[in-house]
Length: 326
Image (cartoon, rainbow, N blue to C red; front, side, top):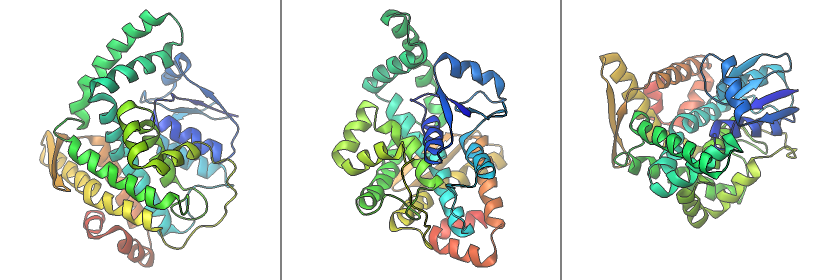
């Protein structure tokens, strides 16, 4: 049996919990102080942490999901078609590395969300000690998180682009989910789980919750279903991405590709900040080395495709990506 150490306010924890549920892999969920203790077993102290039945600890949701792919063959979340697998991975990466800015921004930019969520997150961890102690811890946590906002690009100046790209993805899902639940077949892929992780938090925090329920009501309900797809019996993968997947890839081309390109260029030049414009909005933040690793990984996966599959992918992802990955 696996043990997943996470938190319900962590998008990547929700992502991994949903993957384990869909794949019907026996696991125990741990949170609070037990999760903090588990961080001592991994090199980089980020959640979720997955402990395998053999007792090994590992974290970082994308490597974790591929580790499960290597270990368990049934109910895979990676399409067997290499071209489809690449674009599903691209959407998952876009969700993990760009849409997370929406989660962070909605949670910590406005006071109403800061107050509610800092108290809830402190309660999630402590679970006892009395309301005063929980609120004192919440105040410290809120100050720490709000202070980190510029480091991850979640500022009021940048949020117009973050919100515009997020709503574009939500609009694509809203068009899709009343017709078909999934993006690449009649079963979920890693792309859906990446999106679920980030948007699961928007469906809880006060400001984005009101927005999603008013503007994207079916997607709001789809997110609730996505937390447990263990009962899904679909076995088929499509030969081409759905219209919604193509629309999301289009948003990624408009926003995430130039973000990765600007980050890589800034690092190469030895600059401290990156800047770019997309969807009529400007964006600037400090460079981030982890995103450079994400770009390198995408390039490696792209280069590994056969010429035929690369040509198929090029038709789906657009020229912005082709130039960056090629």
